[in-house]
Image (cartoon, rainbow, N blue to C red; front, top):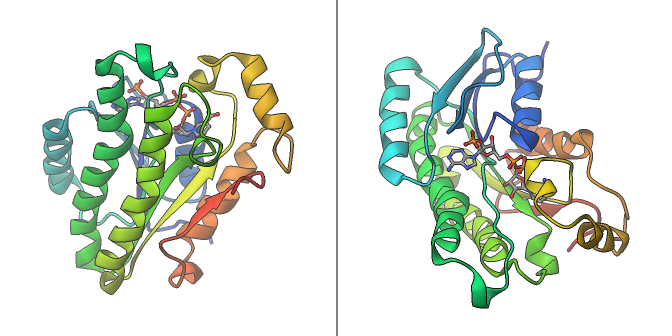
Length: 236
Ligand SMILES: NC(=O)c1ccc[n+]([C@@H]2O[C@H](COP(=O)([O-])OP(=O)(O)OC[C@H]3O[C@@H](n4cnc5c(N)ncnc54)[C@H](OP(=O)(O)O)[C@@H]3O)[C@@H](O)[C@H]2O)c1
C-alpha cells in the first residue's frame, strides 16, 4: 500500500522548489494534496487541488480555509513550506521586506496550523511539519529577520505541540540546508559554497534527504515524536 493512501495533505508553496518536491512525493504515495501559492498550479494530478492565496494576507488565508471546509472533510498533514527571503544588512533592509518575511514565514504558518488543527481535532489525528532553515543556527549576515522567523517556527511548533498533543496532532520542524531553488539563486553562490563547506556533511541537501525526515515526522509510528527540530547536514 502507498505510504499516504487515504490521507489529505496541505503543502504551502507547492508550485516550486522544496514545496513542489514534497507535494509530488505525497501524490506519488497516494495522498490527496492541496497546494497553496500565489501563482498558477504547476502540478496537474487528479488528486491535486490548487488554491491561489497570498500567505502574506491573514484574511486571505482564513478565506482559503473557508473554501476548503466546503471541499474537504479531513486534513491529515500540513507542511508549512512557503517562505520569502530578502537577505540584506539590517541598516538597509527595507521595512516592507522585513514585514513580508514575518507575514509569510511566521504568521502564515501560525494561521495555517491553527486552521488545519480544526480539521485534525475532528479526526483526532494530524501531523504539522514546518520547513525551517540552517540559517537559525548559522545566523548569516544579512539574514537577521529571515533567521528570526525560522527560529520562531520551531517555537511555534513546540508550543502548538503542547496545545494539540491531546488531539493526537504532532508539530515538528525540519531545518533544511541549501538545495537548488529560486530562493537559493537569489543568494551569492560563493557565500552559499562557503557555508556548505563548513557543514559537518559538506554538500547540498537532496530531495531524498528532505523527504526522509518529512516521512519520519508524518509516519503513523511517529505519534510520540513532537516538538522536535531536526537539522540536515549536521547543523545544530
Ligand atoms: N532552497 C534552500 O536552499 C533553502 C534553504 C533553507 C531553507 N529553505 C526553506 O525551504 C522552504 C522552500 O524554499 P524554496 O527554496 O523551495 O523556495 P522557492 O523556490 O522560492 O519557492 C517558494 C514557494 O513559496 C510560495 N510562496 C512564496 N511567497 C508566497 C506567498 N506570499 N503566498 C503564497 N505562497 C508563497 C511560492 O509560490 P508563489 O510565488 O506562486 O506564491 C513558491 O511555491 C522555505 O521555507 C525556505 O525558507 C530553503
